[in-house]
Image (cartoon, rainbow, N blue to C red; front, side, top):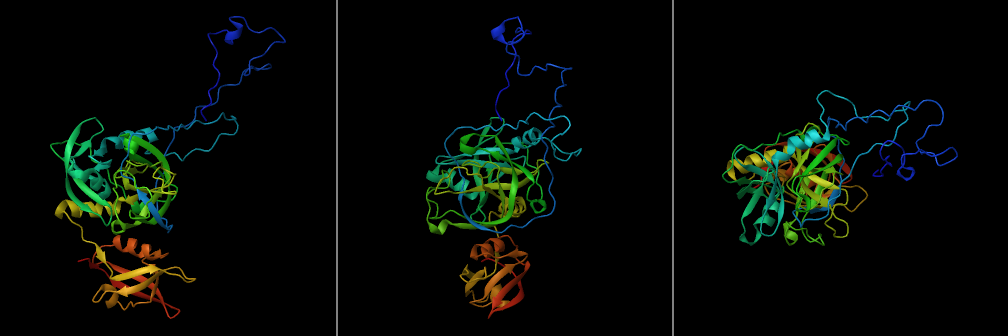
Amino acid sequence: MNANEPREQGTGGWSQFGATPPTPGGFPRRDTITMGQPLPPPPPAPSRKFGFGGRKAIAGLALAVTAIGGGAVGAVVATAFQPERQVVSAPSPVFKQASNEMTVADVAAKVQPSVVMIQGQTGEGSGVVLSEDGLILTNNHVVVGAGQGGGQMTVKFSDGRTAKASVVGTDPATDLAVIRAEGVSGLTKAALGDSDQLRVGDSVLAIGSPLGLDGSVTMGIVSALDRTLTVGGEQDQQVPPGWGRQGQDSTTTIGGAIQTDAAINPGNSGGALVNAAGQLIGINTAIATNGGSSGNIGVGFAIPINTAKQVSEQLISSGKVSHAFLGVSVTDATGDVPGALIRQVTQGSPAEKAGLRQGDLITRIGDKAVDGGDTVVGQVRGFKPGQQVKITYMRDGKANEVTVTLDAKK
């Protein structure tokens, strides 16, 4: 990919021959055409274009991942897309053309002013501007990490300006938070997209401050949708900077996450995942771990913007979030049928009112097949209080369905 073509010196051939070309029988130039007229140069490669999203695809899998808070400045790896020499009669395929598509550079230039770096005494991360007067959306674990030790959070903008920041509200259950940069105005707020319209294979950009390098842009695709993540807790052998050492009680389960192969590293947390139109479709929050490593291994996860929008609006208006409540304690099934086994039903809960019992095996909730207990937890957190949800379950070897009206968690 990065091999350099040899270049001629001056106008008279290779430098070892000076201004005199080689004699017959000598060493001809590699690109010399001995008969006929020279072929015209190959046509220029088309600009890299994004594709657009459509219907939502479902790919369920519960994963244990590592939150990506912040980190020290590290090495930078630049990836170049350089097309190989083509045969004129057989052009390579290109992305579909559309009058309203933008190049990667166009999207990056549009979004970068809306992405900030968040720094604190013990951690750092990223954030996305929600309003011209300083409201910024980020991860809860970024705020926790940056605020440890009683230090003041600082926001650094794409133009180099900095401002102190205070917490508006946090929601550990969804790993989201809103902060406010003080004394600022005229900021470029992000354009919000619709994460329900994403498809596997859609092109995306991740923008943030990986390894302390603010304003970094990486490119990839949506590699899966509707993932269920368990973030934090003792399963992390090495907790990345910005998360802080916490116990098992600090775990949180996130449902409906977007999986991407766009390079994401510690410090990208709270940053933007955007689509081809430069619209915010996710908040980068975690990376898969490999033997406790907190470095990027090619699989990152983002909280869908539709979830983040719902949570942030509540945080801004009241400083807290009301979550849906089903009222069951579940564990992974151990038999041949995948699902979540109900261990306990809370008295007076929506689950009890709908007739669910201890020992029932939940196999589907809404439109989502249940792989284990984390799937139920993650899906319920994606619903709203008062929403009606259909649950499919097994009892005494027979499949049953029930519609549950979710309450607000007290």
